[in-house]
Image (cartoon, rainbow, N blue to C red; front, side):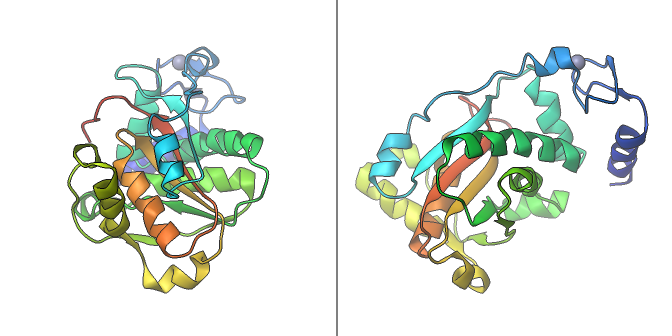
Length: 232
Ligand SMILES: [Zn+2]
């Protein structure tokens, strides 16, 4: 906790070094040097499940900003955000995502809702890195962030092992909208955000929960997309 605050402070006030390669960076750059940021790999693709879940009415669109690949430039950034509580790194990634959303979107969004951490993880870390990304998105799209709007209600079997009908069923009750926020969600256009999408199961379940609570347009977005399950 203390170290995280110190890191953040050092990063804020001192001529900095790149979180990826360690090269010193100037005041116009933050956390990552131009060389390393040029190597971040835009995702630029349609998620493999996008069409199916659009057809099911669970999402209206989805996108990720970058590819996550082990030992590539994005990994130290995600790590700093996740384990060193570097809020500004999450916010920077969120702004990248916000620009993509703004470029593809025609009607404004009302809310940005982070995917909740699992309870056990939350106890260990006391913060949710997806909240930081949500703030960055909101810097660009100027809606409203609601943290804690979605709650995990039970563990679910892996989505990929179920057939289509069972998948929809599975989606509908793994997460629920916190009753406290139900009134704010009804009829609203919503961005649901996670740090990394792998199978898509978690974020799609969250999107299903907000749709069930009467949300309007729902987009599933993430800072990164990974083909393999990350060890987190
Ligand atoms: Zn670098």
